[in-house]
Length: 174
Image 1 (cartoon, rainbow, N blue to C red):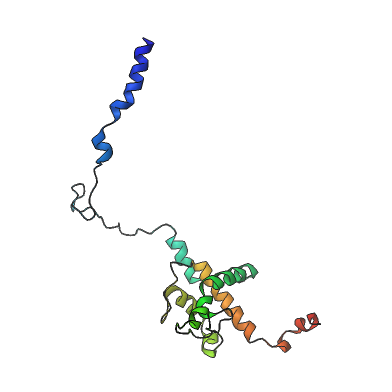
Image 2 (cartoon, rainbow, N blue to C red):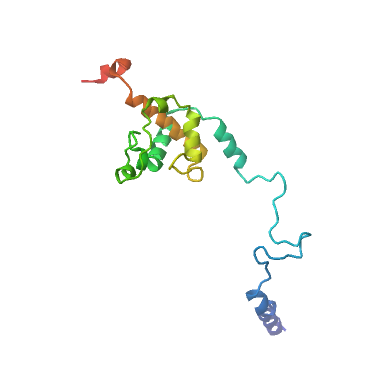
């Protein structure tokens, strides 16, 4: 009795195996006809109002910049070094390594026009690209784009700073 039950238990998984269904699974060809849907099309349009996960949050981050603090500036410095220095250079003069090898130079961040440009303009250029610069929207998250903008503003301030404007620095000099 126990031997029969044991044999049945061993043979039961084999009964579930069907070579055809394991190797030839039913599927629809891309853009092929599909009788399952009323329009007989395999690829169905998205229902109205569908939003990808995270899109609403990402969209809200593009509208309002975060509060600038030391952590945001540090993140901006890190992201700037990764994504921007090849063309814009370490100080934002537009003399990065790519430019030194013949690529067209981007404008310096220290010109009057770039200093006067609103922060949203710099954010939009990072997002959409401009001239020969391609879009970084898929490479840099919105919060990081704002961090880069904050760091660019800090670069602009540092390059135009005068010792007379910073009385605390005088006391720290030997």
